[in-house]
Image 1 (cartoon, protein in one colour):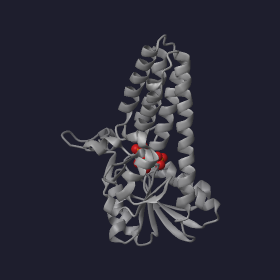
Image 2: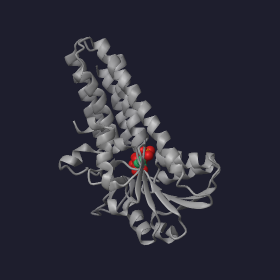
Image 3: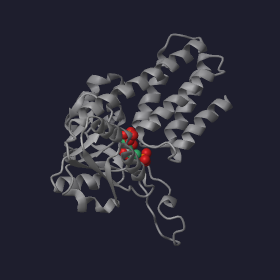
Image 4: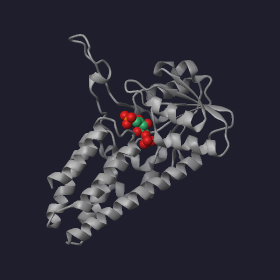
Length: 309
Ligand code: RUB
């Protein structure tokens, strides 16, 4: 049991340290860690097995607060074991392994659909601005490139930990002309941009989107410059808790990321994400198509009713 929770612990640590970064990669790592736990469990009863799963869930959820995709995935997998009539641990473990496979397949499927739909919005000879590193955004841009579109990308560096550099490297590897700018230069370049496109960590019941800190400022700048601003996201980033009154928690990270050796008494704040109001979002590009943030809850309800259970 100790060894198993160590494997969950290692994944949680990697997530905390941003060695695993981005909502999708975080969810995939958590799903795989739970699957390993199930495969290697030494639990002797259903009760003990469920206890193991629940403690794994707590450790993973605590790794990063603003990650409903991970929470939805882990919750769903554990739920399959909880509601099973099966009492054999071996069979229950198999149920968890199968649900992990199914969830991962769904994620892959969604990524493909999103790329297929979103790539159509990338016009030939256009300039796209993106913020942070979203694997869903870079996959979509890759698809557009494979379809023969020629475009250039402007990446914000994304302080304080520079995920924009990851995006820039990926774009260069694709052979896309890429420009890196400081975050505060987003407005300066916005008039040269045809489309701003970002990923998401969470979607709330009101259709607001939570993504890397600075996203909402970019959305405002895009609005003012009349540049379309799109979010690309799997619908499973919807947080059902927001439906029932909870606010999405915004993770606040260590001040060390901003200044390693600051003067005494300086207050440093380091929120990792911010909320972009739905009014500034042209559309959410998801596996069901391009949907208005105003109707996203209904779309989630139709596609994934279990999320509300
Ligand atoms: C990453 C970030 C990404 C979303 C979406 O923040 O804000 O835009 O997670 O990514 P961090 P994806 O680097 O702090 O995790 O599309 O890969 O799910």
